Image (cartoon, rainbow, N blue to C red):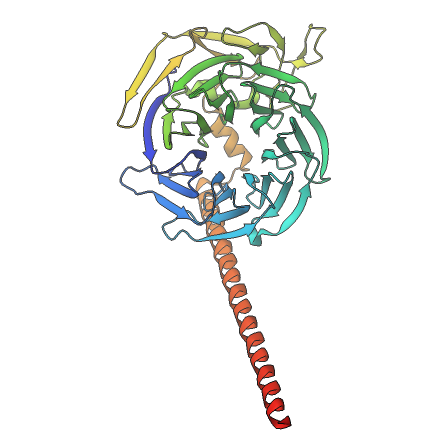
Amino acid sequence: MTTDPTLERHFKGHKDNVTSVDFSCNMKQIATGSMDSCVMIWNMKPQMRAYRFDGHKDGVTSVQFSPSGHLVASASRDKTVRLWVPSRKAESTAYRAHTATVRSVNFSGDGQTLVTASDDKTIKVWTVHRQKFLFSLNQHINWVRCAKFSPDDRLIVSSSDDKTIKLWDKNSRECIHSFYEHAGYANHVDFHPSGTCIAAASTDNSVKVWDIRSHKMLQHYQVHSGVVNSLSFHPSGNFLITASSDSTMKILDLVEGKLLYTLHGHQGPVTSVAFSRTGEYIASGGSDEQVMVWKSNFDSSDCGDTVRLQHKTTSRIQAPPASSRAQPDFSMHPHVPRSQTSDPSEDFNRQDFQTAAHPQSNCRSSIHNRAAQSHTSRDPTSSSTHRTQTPGVPQNSSHVQEQSQASDGGVHPGLASTLEHIIGQLDILTQTVSILEQRLTLTEDKLKECLENQMEIGLQLQRRQGGEEEV
């Protein structure tokens, strides 16, 4: 049975708004950025101290761990991007990425490239090794707030103050579609884990989910009373968490198309939120300078069938849910059999459903700590948690594990762990080489400057000697 999310820990150390949060892949560390110009690395083990990384000369707007967890990228208002090794030594390499504030930084799935978004109206793609500039995407006509790679790294999605969300083909570097926001602009945008949909957090207080194949809006949630600043998909693809300036976070059930939980804890706007890689934990940051870690407490069977699920209805959700509009397809497996809908207004293929409702009491939990009083409230319209089962597809809580093993091509877990360790060491080696290259460049510049000074002094001496001879 699913229980309400609970506040596990809170961290206090930043001296200004927390702008960005991200978990490492092994859940041992959380990276945060703040307008105090610092990047902090918090250790989940209580006895371990946090690391404070100073290097940026202005507010940090975005942070993200590399897929291996051995690097952290940070973007800043000082127009630079930094790559850090998340250890006590705080080694980093910096490069001037844009001509204005860098709003967003994101690693590709393979960890080899970075995409950055900036107030200079551009999106740029870089190699992680040596931070080599690859190309720029230039069709936005106002500040670009966010840019993210798709799960397969073939697409990039970006959101801008020009009230558009653009979808780009990474290989052709062309904009393949623009979604238009009419009432506001999207602060944050991200891909559904299946890669078939995107979600946008908007300044008009709403959250929208779009199908990137049909280009239709699948869901429209109006559950916040303030600007929506950030969002994050649960790795199963069944849930979406949003963070708002109304000081709350909302967990949305994408399968049922409804508001599931409201999380209270931050005193003031919640500026960032992220699920951990497993979905077991949630991290949030706010204008109260705090970082909070929540346990999601989702039933494994609610998440186990990951993105085989098809949506039952696409709804325009308000505080009380309203009427159905369309139907999203969150399937990562296009080979799953589908049946044609009878709804003439939408030309979507739907998959038949069987839903089993499990009653659950409408409960409320509260956690008291030194910094804040927080509680989780369950939406009164969702007194039951629904599980969805696809006909002909057995529902099994171990499906994710089996699927991940299959996707590894049957690689032995020990070998996979060794390979991951080797990749991590290569990441660190690459970073170290990059830092050494920077230092060598600085040394070369100093030597060049010394030689130029010596030549100038020599010329001055020759001129002086020539003048004395003439006299």
